[in-house]
Image (spheres, rainbow, N blue to C red):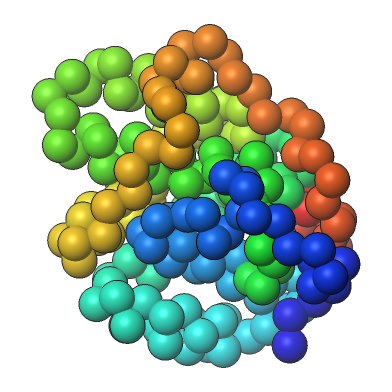
Length: 193
């Protein structure tokens, strides 16, 4: 049912860049992102995509996270500043772009728990600027915040991956090189790769 990423079956990664190494909150969120992109690539009807997402998010008691996830991904599809590397749902590898998306949701969750709003907002903008056009950053932020809230209400936390997301954003950590990923380009969205 899903396209591509057939090369991963023989040599699955086992390091920190693997799907298996992610915590459960990041796994669920990344699975939702990947299903949404796979549906776009395959041209699935929205009802079919939603049904698949509902099955997964229902198990985590986070059904209300689907609408903001879909909103966030729709804005990403039209507002990205370059091709975004998103693997198929079965792929054991995690791209730098996928990590960036998870980090953005994690920053939104941190913002809800932390009073240092200005620092978090600045970090969000810098990190989002590595994948989004400037005009799309604010549009993307609202569904990302809503997704973060829905996940928190379901008890799903996305801790920062690695060291310090804010420090990476301050340093201008652009994620331009996605590494060795199989490309997937859907004609309707040349930016989701």
